[in-house]
Image (cartoon, rainbow, N blue to C red; front, top):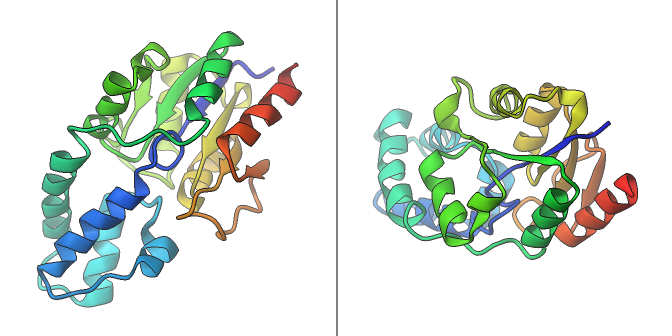
Length: 218
């Protein structure tokens, strides 16, 4: 019996991938690199920032270490994403509200830091839905490792077979599956076209995901 739903944050609850791409564009300009959006979609969207930094240092032979690039990106991230909430994904609030109305437990499991999630909680009022936020601050290994989902389940007091994860990226899907969770995927413009064949179901909108949940639980 399903007792809880665990939501990813970036790209699932909030439309943040465009801002993440823009932050890399600005940072890479300092190295004389014109970073194409197609490459971001193919290799970096939905992937933790540290892994993004490692990819970029190797792909462009940057004269810095991945840790140095990550640190520079973190400063920019906190300036942009740590202060102002990104727009909600259409249908996200209605989906979360429906889950809460069913008496199901909720949590956020994200590869981002808590400071990036906080504006969503405070400015969109999502703190009334989510008392549990599992972020990269809480775990040793980021997605696609299962750690962040394991942490969320521990805080919820539930087992993996009692929850469903909602994700938007291959990295997040792998993380949820590695934890033993059933996972549905809601694609966005940055994740569409990737391989989601191992997901329980794949949707193009959060509204479709909510309707699937309703049919399953009612």
